[in-house]
Image 1: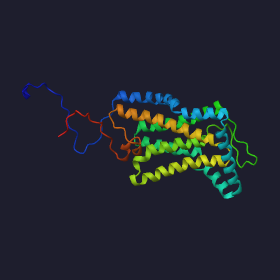
Image 2 (image 1 turned 45 degrees about the vertical axis):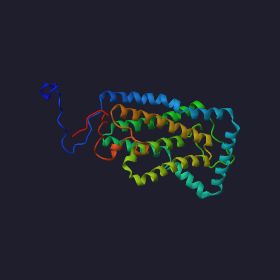
Image 3 (image 1 turned 135 degrees about the horizontal axis):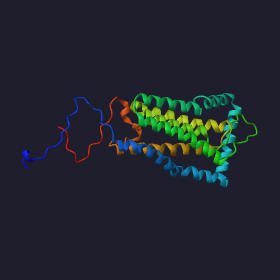
Image 4 (image 1 turned 90 degrees about the horizontal axis):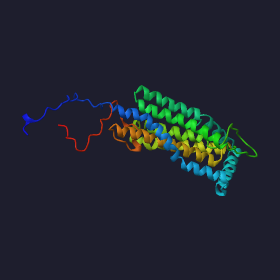
Length: 278
């Protein structure tokens, strides 16, 4: 077929030089993003299986777990009772930077910044994940109804039930959200420091709750596992939306939306058989 015989083709004008913004993703993928988040909450039930196993061991009174709970409570609580500076540090950290309210305010600030950047879906993901974590923790506490530790010489008190640790779950969820949102803005050489800071916060939060005698080790483990399962489930929903929109799914060290590092958005992935641009 000669060029004169070729059927007419609709040719779109090439974008102006230096124009790197992607076209908006298909509306169908946008509409399905909400349903993906709901599906992720359902998938969370599957991801939370390790927490369910832990709870079964607690209810069954599994001896190794009981010994771990009792030994850690006695050891850590005894250390802070003997060292007033450690006790004051634990109280300051658990009531200050590692308090759930502080963590949620940090996530709220990140959501506000995302809205200013018009990263609507990432803001929605962060807000719903944090909200789901808080509601899940409260529901599980009421459903399990585990009594808090009763030590002979307590140094702190906390209201409500014990399993899971709300501080531990909030620390895990909030740190994971902040990492996945803000990693694109962190220089690569500084990213190990960001991961280290998050790990210290999560581990430190759990240890202070045990040392103050308001949670068992298994409470803290349950909070960590639930928080991690929730973030993993909703992050899967976000990655699925990117894939359905024709965007590449970044590796974990890049965060959920690497495009935040610049003012430009990413071009949809070009099919392998598509002709190269000239």
